[in-house]
Image (cartoon, rainbow, N blue to C red; front, side):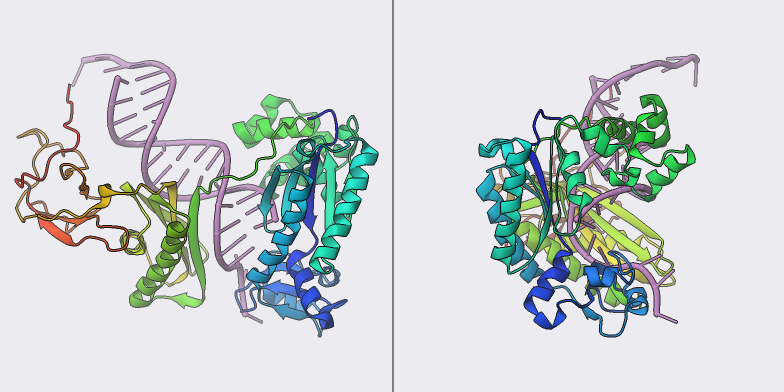
Length: 441
DNA sequence: TCTGGGGTCCTAGGACCC
DNA sequence: TCTGGGGTCCTAGGACCC
């Protein structure tokens, strides 16, 4: 918590719908719902006119169609248009301070202390008022709600307080007076499950929360979460505004219009998802070691299966190969509603001869025992080409294709643009060397 | 005519290592 | 033939956010 209200939070109002109303004047003043328009779609954003009829984000679109009047516009999203508009807004924020943290397309924090501003209440109020005008003018009428406070959480709560087109400055010293009457759901990190647990011990407002001990709170909702809420209830929040965070995972998923059983179709879907993930990884110059498959069954039960590889991947074919194997091990009877493919454990792509292709590889019979006669399996990574070439060969996982005991089929990493061939090696091939001789002591 | 898609963070158990 | 404890990695699931 700072001594002056120097953190600003901006939240664009009903953003997707507002862009649609800006671009299509006939929609202005009318209920607009943006989101999936199919039978399994959900609402991304409802305009305020549509909210008056009960339409909400995350509501199934068919339900929104039931409750909204005739004449309501149901539109699929145009992400490129939203992105372009958001960039105009973010540029306006960067005029205020170099420290801008974009949290999503339509939301950002600004550290005003890094911008050399008058941080009095009057000063930040005038600043925020000018900003709102600037945004409306630059975007052609999109409005935003602004909160300014002594911490991120107070700024965010401030921007929620008077929506749409609102402005709230929480002066230093008034944090608890603002916070305590609010429902616990106002705090970031309190969703339906946490609110329900808190309700069971008669905690409804942040003020109620303030009366719980740290021990009670962590017992109720867990270590990290409890400690975080304990601090938030006291306006104790020193999280900095950070310019850019590295992505930790990349994923793509798809809900099918109707449940899918056909194995060929499922394979094709996995390939398509892996292609999207792989190309995004390659475009961002990154790759990751853990491939995750997500499956939602006909009954909405959802599970994930993941595998961590010896080396990071960004090649769609490799990602797809792992995802397909993971899918093979899950029960698909009854049909699948959704498939997803993700890559995590990201690292900046390692360039160079590490991925060069070996020019020779020969067939053989058996993997070496790590210790002759010892029944325990050898190390999982069985082979490295001397020098630059890497062989991924893991028993029972990774790049072993054809898991017979007597031979191992190994995929050689090729250059990024052209993955190497699949070959079969034998254990007495001099190229195969245990990477890490085990130490049984 | 049920419940998207893209993320982040946390927890818990087991394996493994020292 | 008795057995601690900490740390890290991996997997799976859950809560939450926009």
